[in-house]
Every structure is written in C-alpha cells, then in structure tokens.
Image (cartoon, rainbow, N blue to C red; front, side, top):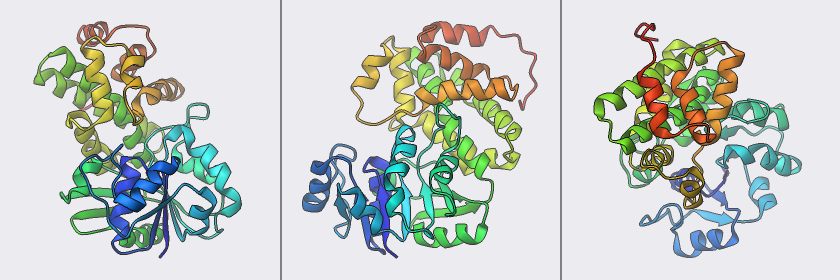
Length: 330
C-alpha cells in the first residue's frame, strides 16, 4: 500500500518513518529544505533532533505528487491548516481512499472536529482519527506505546489498524469518534493548566487535582456532545491526558510551565517551532462549554490566561477558592 503523510512535524515524521518499514511511504514537507534533509540525511533535526529516520522513507515538498501517490492518506498538519490543506489537495485525492487525521484540536470558527473538517471538504471517503498517549520521539526511539484508531466503521478501523501497527507500537480500534477526538483536543488545555502548576511550584497534590478535575470536565463535555463515557477512561482520554500533562516533551505542558514562571505567551510561542494546540483549543472549549451548558472551570481559567484576561497565578488562586459543591467523579 502506498501511504502519504502530510506534515513533517514530529508526529507526522514519526508515523511516516514507522510506516516506511513495511509500505512505500511518502512524507510531504512544506519546506523543501526539510524534504531534502529527510531524503539525503534521513533526519529531521528541526523536529526530531538526535533521531535517524527509516532509510526507506522519502519526502517531497510537491503537494500534488504526494497526494497522487496515496492509497492511504494521513493528515498531520496543524489543526488551523487542515481545511486549507484539504481544499488544496481536493483535485488530486482518489475518491475511494481512507484518510486518517493525526491532528488534535478543533476548528476555531466552526468548532468542528478534524474528521468533520476533512469530511466536509472531501466527502464520500472513510475518515478516521488516530489518537492516544503518543510522544513522537519516544515512539521513534522504539519504546512501547499504544494508540487508538477511531472511525464508525470498525471494518475500516481494523484495516487501518493492520497498516499502522508496527512492533511495540500497538493500535486499538474504537467506534466512538466523537469521544476520541474530543479527548485528544481538550486534554491539551488541561496540560497547559498542569504546566502552570509546575511553573508555579504549587506541588504534586495540586497538579493531580488539576489533572483529575480536568478529566472530569472534558468527560462531561464529551458525553454531552455524544461521546461515550468509557472512552474518556481509556487511551484516548485519561491515557493521553496523563502523558500530555506530565511529559517534559509535551508542548502544551511546556507552554503552561513557562506561563507559570511569569513569561508572556507571545514570547513563549515565538521560540517554539511546533504548535501548542491547547492555546487555541482553550477558546473553542469555552465556546462549546457555553453551547452545551457544561461547567468547565479549569478550561475557563486557562482561556482567561491565554487570552490575557488574567495571570497564571491569579487563575490558580481562582480555582482554589471555588466552593466545593461538585461531587467526585465530576
């Protein structure tokens, strides 16, 4: 099977390298220099420093060439670029091929999940989401990990599962696309909160409280939007949340930690070459919470921080003085 991965960030590059061991795989990089580096040096130092990629992996900066090649299309561009990228490739995408989204976030204007955006632009094709606790550099280094491929048609999910599973990287199937995608998107906001706790030095008890209450919040919203409760206790929910909240490699946790240390958000984002999706997702999470009338105090405070309405320290003070009328679990 000829596989194309769109987006040569850390996760897109990692997936492409894994797949290249068994399938002819082409990685599309927006930057021609990145494509040249992958082809000539078998590295992507800008996103995965110190790691060597599979020598069978090839890259291109020619979007048409990349898409025409594909029998399975994997989309790993930032969420803000998914719609525009799908619109660009629409003339070249075969009508029958499955499309897998790696992007964890929500479209700001429409509040759509990424599989919804892809289906909106490229209707009639099976669309799935790959999500879970997946730190790219650990997987590329050969450490064991698991992910979830979510699509309503489990026959399609199993077919994609057989392509993506590689060695100690295990892929499970799930029909709950809503729950899986919302878990992957909303945990980034909670990870910023966890990072802020780390930056403020408030202690592990507080971090555990924020993570647990954050999971309760995203579960409430996810179920209100049609997701299944069990999903949020699995890899796509709690598993992804834990990894993103505690890993030093987590972009969203890093942003939160820097904010907790008193730095300004534009300065933190300006020195990063990867996207911290939770910054924009905080706004969409707030809109969804209002639409579905779901209380989300942790996400609401992070929205206030990233929008400049309050400081990280004040946000934590606000969380800690809330009256304890909620039960546990949320």
